[in-house]
Length: 309
Image (cartoon, rainbow, N blue to C red):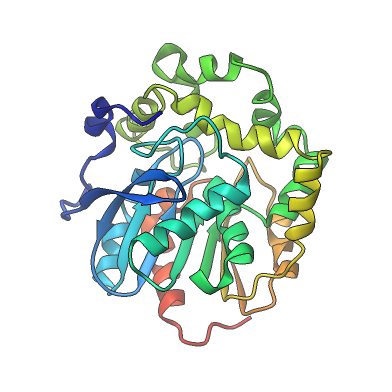
């Protein structure tokens, strides 16, 4: 099942500063993915989290282009303008979506910049296809093995993930009242600087696209339900393999979803230069709450030929 044409007005929107953005679809890993592209140069592929889509990177796309990069933000499988397939929401397959898009763009590799669920998949892609990942920058998401431990240890902070395990009710909750729950998540997970109402409404409209709520939840259902299954145990063992590309790890000190100490421990899985950056007073969306600070940190690191451990 693919996204209907009526999604175009919601998904294929412009950038707030007026920068011209190219919207198109690319084929990868047996599906079709919508991308938003700006600039020329080394590829930087940006991966959104839940409950968002490519537009979460609206500030970073022009900043990266101005810095000399080819900045591409993709919609993950089942979200935004990408295909809503009936299967394929386990992290290994979703990571292959990402590396497949890199190849479809005609590039030998990419720097992955990722947030939340996108970060989980970026960690995975860096382990599974290290030759296609030049650098890794992850925000608001620990390494998958740290995430698993944190979710089991802190049920309160992970309550939304546990609630997703029920059949159909979570989908209805996400789309009820014009996506009011999405709006509460965006606001409640922010730091003191709350997003504008217009920004929240964009994410609410995107979640209302048919089948998006179901597809957005499916990765989290796999993560929990597979914990004791052979496929989940195999994935957890596979993620013991170290990340061997330079890694920038970004986090908001006021993130109410993921503990700082849980995220910070991810460096033990990186056998390459690893840089930790904590944004004081920011919540779960540092790239939106303080886009200038986030973009500056990111671009300086991407341009650093020898990032320090």
